[in-house]
Image (cartoon, rainbow, N blue to C red; front, side):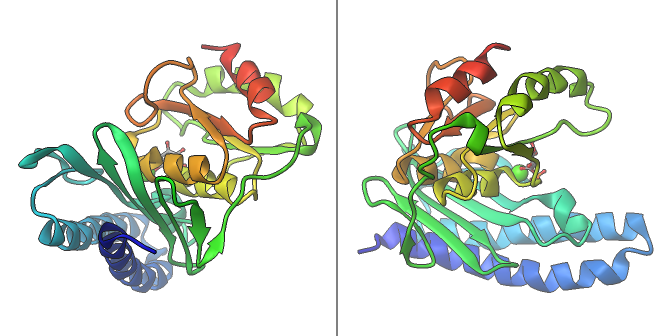
Length: 262
Ligand code: IPD
Ligand code: CA
């Protein structure tokens, strides 16, 4: 049984996703002019957030809001807020790479209670409600069963050019890559988390990440049986700005390695 809130979230994600798929087809035609493509994608991103906001706030006008494009808006109900990334994986989208998603989370009293991540290009809809398991297109998800680091692959984000954070990130690779079956950089934090929930990758870590990138994915991983913490291992993860997660068997060793650089 799906809650009324989940129905509202899925409707919003599918509606925004349909618009983004149309825009994604257009992006290829615009590649000749990089600036043209960039402006077009920014518009597509803003339009997706507008659609989601209209749907969610229309159905639940008292809830608060945090969206990547429009920021924070307090609601009459201070205990609930939507946390939305209308287009996670923007750089992939801009390059015509079909790996991006709409991410919608509902937070209640500081805890994520419902989550939807929609990979519209692949028509994969991930959803979770607290206590109700994690799902993809009607199939129950479980984190992977791998127990050895050397058999396992881990997703992460690599800081983009100009951020100045690459030298530090390379220290992570130097510690982690040699003891694993590989590191992946897919370009969408929301889908990285959905893939951990689906057992497609065995763990994920990232530094300098925003609440809207990870809010929905955190619940998916937990409901699929995974462990999710901040890199320091303190406090709530959503607003922390960093994250480490894996299946229960790998978590202590993997998180331990990540934590060697606090
Ligand atoms: C980005 C993606 C990427 C992550 C970055 C995010 P955006 O979000 O999730 O995987 O490494 O930190 O900012 O910009 O595509 O919405
Ligand atoms: Ca994002």
